[in-house]
Each structure stands twice: as structure tokens, then as C-alpha cells.
Length: 278
Image (cartoon, rainbow, N blue to C red):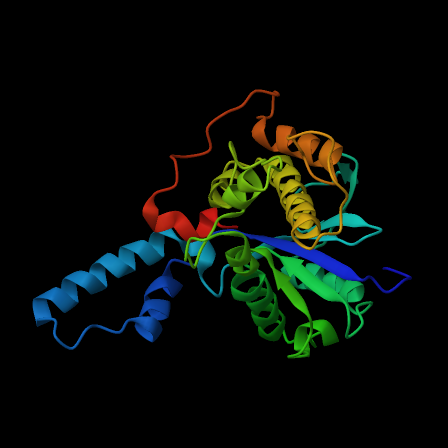
């Protein structure tokens, strides 16, 4: 646990596929057909939406959270409940919990160090990471830490704030694209959030851990550049404030068990766009 209140906590979660039976229940709660549609059209659109839900099971509200990566100005670590006993991955401390509930309890022990002024940072933080963490804690009957319960807790969502750095009026901009446009190193060219469920199924747990670490470091570096907290760089190229570790994590995430890059599934389709934002 942190002994000093952090000024910021950059956090990033990874999820795996939820229960397919939950897909239709989730769709029924959200499906709203256009009143102008004919019955046949409604049925067709419903089935299309159901297939999409089944392809994106990791985005269900009930999808398990398998890891939470944390970065402050003084610390970086990964909490998880993967079958991975490594104490470190690319030099970053890794803590294994018995299950998802135990991991969330451990996370809470860190988050209680946040003050009402601590800024929570992430990419798509407000519409993915924070709601998912709150939902899972409630599901397990866990008391929310103040920084997740306070409605006025400061947050900085790099995806939402990117609109101040672009003339394009877009609701979604992936982390990979933001990093590229900002001149920062991106680790997502070979592994993305959409690959995590596949990596989990194939037992490539160390790659998931390395990817999660690279993700939180990249998000933290992007935040620092977007908020003017880093000095001018010497040249046009830049790999962010945590270049060495982030690049090492990205290399490890891109490498298979024998150190060779291997495919983890087909390229993300338009239906998987939301996963690619993470």
C-alpha cells in the first residue's frame, strides 16, 4: 500500500469474455428499435445486434476483470488473478490474488490512499474502467473506496480530452492513434485489448501482464504530455516518460512463449472498435 497520497493514479483494466448467456439479457435491456421499422426488420436487426454482443463478450457488464494496472508519480504495479506467479514482469512488481474479488480488495487497499484532489487518469476511463470497477465491487458486496464513490473525484480521460488536440469531431479515438499523433511510442501495433481474451484462452498470461503494464505506462505518458508536465524533447521522436520499461513491456507483449511474434487472432473488425480503444 502507498504511504504517501498520490497526486494522480493512472489505471487500466483488462477483461476477458463474459458468459454468453448474459449477452441476450444485456441486449434486451438496451435494444431500442426504430418505431418506423417493420417487424421483419426489427427481428433482423435484433439478431444482428445479438451476434455483435456475442463477439464482444469482454465488454459485457458482467465480464471478469483479470487485471488492474496502476501508475502513480512514485510507483507502478500490476494486480491480477491470472495463473502467473512471477513477482515482476519487465521489472514492474506484479501481485497475484486468489480470485477477482480478492484482487478488487487489494486494489481498494491502494485506492484508499487517494485524496479528494487525487486525479484518476486513463483512456476511456469514464466510460469503461471506472464503471466496470464500480460494478464489480458492488457485485461482490465490497465497499467502494472514496475515490470511486465520490461523484466529484477529479478525472482526466485522455480519450475525451483528445478533442482539444484535434479539429476532427470524433467521439472515439483509440489510444494507439493518440500515441501516434502525439509522437509517442505505441505498443499496440501487435497486441491490443481485443486480443486479451484470446491470449487468456491460449494461456499466454505473461503476455497479458506485459501488455497491461505497457498500456498503463503509455496512458500515463500521454497524460503527462497532454497536460504540459514534461519538458521539450531533443528531437522529433519520443517514446514517452517511461520509454525503457514501456518499450520492453511492448516487446514482451508482442513476443510468443519462445520469444517470437505470433498471431493472436484476426485483425479487429468494425464491430470490435470499442475493444481497440482500450
